[in-house]
Image (cartoon, rainbow, N blue to C red; front, top):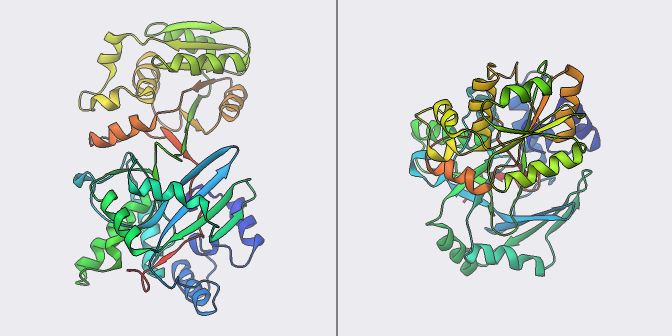
Length: 393
């Protein structure tokens, strides 16, 4: 998996699985002897290239990469994308970044002279590139593998010069939203700037490895990231919410309650408050209170987000809580949020997924999503493709 979702236990399991697991490059250990862990990763990458564990492809290619799991197929193009700052409105970030992760990835990139992991981009396709991706499945894959999470991975190489030129022409006027990998993209830009400041001129650092998916075909699934507020009982949370929402108690069980949440979300903003036993559905936020709660400097697209309504009107205004990670917890699935709420005598705040189009609208407005807004799945796996600068076009 991407480096930033691997905990210590999974890192140890991945290392034990095989001596050539790519986690040894993306998360090098501190016990590197005389080397820093970054230098150790650079040395290990050089060893794997020298002994044939890794070898460069013989000709330039774009790759069609497919992931299939649980009945869902995601398929897109992997290649090197030209690096541009956010203000160019070509590659659009929707989240802010932090200095620490960028510094970490920058040191690793400098030591390995490679893009070890791809960023994940979503765009509105429908052109030649989308057709190339759709047609790839008719040929035998270059690589096929399954990972323990049940995902099948397949890879095809596209090397025909005319096809590559047609794809480039199709993609050139388009723009894409970063679905995952904001810190990696910030690292690409920082490394490019460092090389230019060092007088190195144009080079492979002007591009970065990216997985580009047409959101309208073979696109990702978008999951909500739920909240839990320890110490605030759901009955109290629901009563406080009545000052700004229509509140309805759901007495037919948690499954029926989550179904009601999904149905209500098709027509407007909706939330579910529960501890796994009792549940309340929140709909129809009061327009006057909502407008007063929203930060004036935010875009209309940002103000329309369910997650923005949750944090501004519900958490801050009606519940009068500090919007910090010490007060509001984040969970990637309903059971985890409900369990956390039940264990702490608190409330699980369940949300509907944010549509990809809404994420794109916020990015196009030059704004940033509230933290922990959207989970795009599946994330591209690391290790199928590495872009080493010594061989990069």
